[in-house]
Each structure stands twice: as C-alpha cells, then as structure tokens.
Amino acid sequence: MTAEPSNGSPISTQDHLLQQYRDHLLGVFGAPQAVLVRGEGARVWDADGHELLDLLGGIAVNVLGHAHPQWAEAVADQARTLGHISNFFTSPQQIELADALLEISGAPAGSHVFFANSGAEANEAAFKLARRNGHQKAGEDGARTKIVAVDGSFHGRTMGALALTAKKAYRQPFEPLPGGVVHIAPTLEALEEVMDNTVSALVVEPIRGEQGVHALPEGWLQRARELTRQHGALLILDEVQTGIGRTGQWLAFPDQLNPGELPDAITLAKGLGGGFPIGAMITLGQEVSDLLTAGQHGTTFGGNPLATAAGLATLRIIQEQDLMANVRSVSKVIADGLGQLDDVAEVRSHGFLIGFDLVDTRDEHSKTTAPLGAAVVAAARAQGFIVNSTGGATLRLAPPLILTEEQAESFLTQLPKIVARARTAVNQA
Image 1 (cartoon, rainbow, N blue to C red):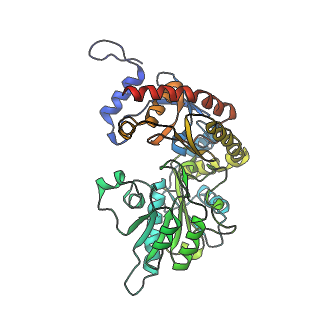
Image 2 (cartoon, rainbow, N blue to C red):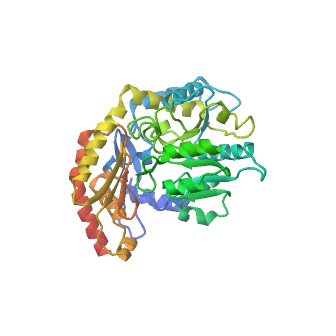
Image 3 (cartoon, rainbow, N blue to C red):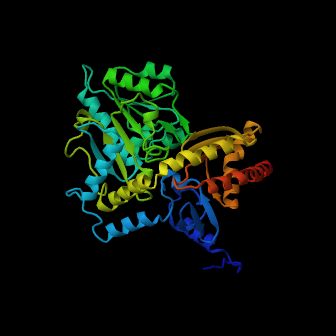
C-alpha cells in the first residue's frame, strides 16, 4: 500500500500509517519509531518490510519472542473455549496460574495471588495493601500513612503507582498525588534513618531498570527486610520488570536476601503473559494476605481465562525449554562483549536486563541538547536493531529469553559502527 501527499510524490506504507497515527491517537507516547506488522522469534518486520532484531522485547515483556507457536496455540485454544467470565466466577486456568506463582516465589502457607491487568495495577493493589497495614498498625497518633520508596524507581503511571515513582517529570504534571510517600536514596544510611514505627511499607525494585539497570547496594535489601520486620512495616518488592526469568531465575530478589528470607508481597507483570496483558500481586503469608478483604479491591478483567492461559503457557515454555539457562549463558556473551568495546564506559548486567553507559566526552550542554543514547537508538534501528535509551548516554537491553548467541554476536559486531554514526549525528546537531 502506498499513498500520495499533496505534492503528488509517493510515500511509504509506514510513513502513511505514521501520519494516520498522528491524526488519530493521543500523543502521550510521542512519535512511534516505526509501524511493526509481524514478528517471529526475536525478529520483527516493519510496514515497509525492514527486518529488526528486537533487543528490547516490548520493554521486557516478550520473554518468548514473537509468535511463539506453543504460546500462540495455547492462547488460540483458550479463545475458542472461554475468554472472559468476570470476577463473579473463576476458571481452572486462574487457579493453576496462581498455584504456579506461589510455587516459584517460595510462598509459605496462607499466601495468595491477586490478578490485575498490568504492573501499574499490581502496584496499585500493593499501595492499598500498604495502607491497610498502616490502619491495622495504627498507634496513638492514628493510622500509619508513611510509605517509603527509592530514588530512581519506576512503579507505574496510575496515581498510586505514580506516587511511588520518583521521577519528577512523571509526577509534577499530576500533583497532588496520594500523600504519605517518602523517597530516599538507595543507601544504608538513608534506609536506617527513615525506618521507624510510622512506616507502613517499603516499596522497592530489586533492580531499577528505568534508571539504567542499577541493582541495590550489597546488603541493602537484607537490611530492609530486618528493619521492616522490626518496625511492623511491609517489604513490597516490585518485580514487574525483573521477574519471570528476566535475570536468569524466576525472581531477582533471592540473590539479595539471606536464604529462606522472603518479602511480604511481590508484584509482577510484563513477562508474565508473554505479551498478553496481565499483572499479579503475591501476598506472602496469612497475616499479609488477610489485610485486604472482600470488597476492598477488585478488577473486571484481571485474571480472566484468556490472560491466565497466556501466563500458564509462558511459564511452561520457559521451564520446558530451559530458557533461564539460555539467559545466563547468552547474557554473559553480551556483557563480556560490551566490556571489551572502547565506546562502553560501564556495563551492568543482570541476565537479560542489561544497562551500559557509553563514553561521552562532550560538554554538559551538548549532552543535554543532543543525547548520545537517543542517537544510538536511531542509528541501531537503521542498522536493524531495536534498543532503548534510558537517558543521556545510557542504553538498556531487555531481549526475549530465546535470544541466541549468534544474534547477540551480530549486535556486538555492529555496535561500534552504530555508535560511530550516532556520534557523527550528535556532533552535527
């Protein structure tokens, strides 16, 4: 399909569709980079037929890549059987997926699962859980209202999740946000200072992906577990981006807590549905599970048969095909390869959640007006790769768990040329 603008010259199918996008869709995402029409494995094709290696995976969502045949078959089979039933009913798929999530999280007796539609909704449920804990632990001065979150965090765009999110640019246009949230630096000193008997919950990502893939300092999360338990506060872990095999294991937190230690709640989404929208909050233990009672929270679509069938298929395929082992081996190839490039200043690799900083010796004005990372994203796309910049000269990779070593090597081989073209572009800007 081609179209002609007013001057009579032909434009591409993609340009035509992008113009329709600008005409018809709310511009909250900015201009799309491309119109994607098909995918297979770790590859996608745009509307003009250009092939791209997807190293972002829908921002850590497409853990099985695109159009995985077993996943597609499971979703199609469920769609032909039962799609949606409302929360007045349940389904075998919902019950089975909840059981699987309790198993992979190491949940003790009395643990439960709440299904939502996204990570933001899972974190909204967690926000309410924190509030309920604050009411139940009320002291002489009334309910505890303080919730502690961490600088550099991202928990979602809905109002409660946004209150937990630290980035001012996301928050300021919508203030006042739900109150009581305090953001602290991810240091042991700040943690020790803030934790007392006025705190209802500490909400934290084990690895802050939005900031450029930064793990918490060694020992921080374990100390957080000790302090929250001491003061009767909940420890809530946002594993929306890090969960479901992303780091080479089901969840990221076990590497940061002592053996046998658990948080009080975990939120999940992104990779959980393999591309189908679904989120979840896991409450660990009976006491935490009892904080929210009938009628205090809900959702129309959360955990319907179609979404939970997609989630079950995703977990089964990851396990049956040993994809977490693939993550561990191929991510080492990527991290080692990046570390050998002169253009790369620092690499932060946690399985298939990888952040790296490029060397950028320009003055601060130039870095602000023409960010190197954004130029690399554009140059990479022109070269056939989808990557992401989290700002400045920082790049983030979150590829499908099926990415092969050969595909990883193809990116590493081309990256110096991509960066060189990006440097030329920003220097001319």
